[in-house]
Image (cartoon, rainbow over all chains, first blue to last red):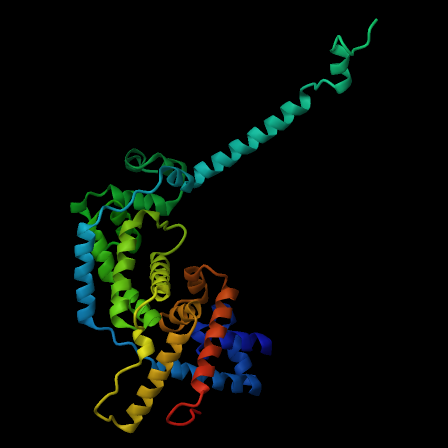
Length: 137
Length: 221
């Protein structure tokens, strides 16, 4: 792990390696053991982590009970959940999505093939067929 | 695929080999009297909720209410406002239960997303008086000096968090306080992991600058 990668992750996730991406934790620990610069940066991050840890939340159990009761009342009065749109539900099925894509691909190929094999009259042939401007024999 | 699923579920399950969808289809096929609410996982409870089962939703709310409220409180700072936002978010989950897709995200990821978005919306609404801007009332009883220092630091951190841009605060809340991995927090905020790391870095820098400012009681180290 490079110093700059270590610094980037340290400034993102803080000093506790448990928060870091799992694949990079071991490399980070090794760098911390061998590099004084990494250790100094880690100490600074620890201080900020400690400050964040000072902000403790006290969750009031009575507030939770009050909210749960209120939610129960509101849900009892509310309409049932909105049903999922039929089209959206159909689109969610991977089998149908695949079938729709296959159908679209087949249709495009067929349209391309059909238009390539249909004889198109040239401008000259159209003009020639016109009795007013066509070639007179 | 078992015959019971093919006969009781909409046609789209017949086209998928998705095991999770088939498992939830079997769960939905159970009548309410056969349902094991405490033993059901989040996906089963959500499948029953989407079908209008209020008991299933109550079990889900009991399981996740504290998490939702904690997040709202971290985001808003004001307990009363956080209660309102938590309730609104839970009601939103009831109303939109069928739009959650277990193949796309875990239930908790979706829950955090709903709560964080509701909290950000609430902060954007104009209010007559922002309680967090008004500050805490002074404590009449002088506590011991160590506690005083810790309380002062906690107040400064809370005040810095309240002043922080919403998405940076959300990123810090999810990774530092809720313990989500970088990938999960990025999913909640609908950003890449790199984007989340940018939010975290800016958030930490903001916090450090705020805490390094001289306070009325002198400079903090």
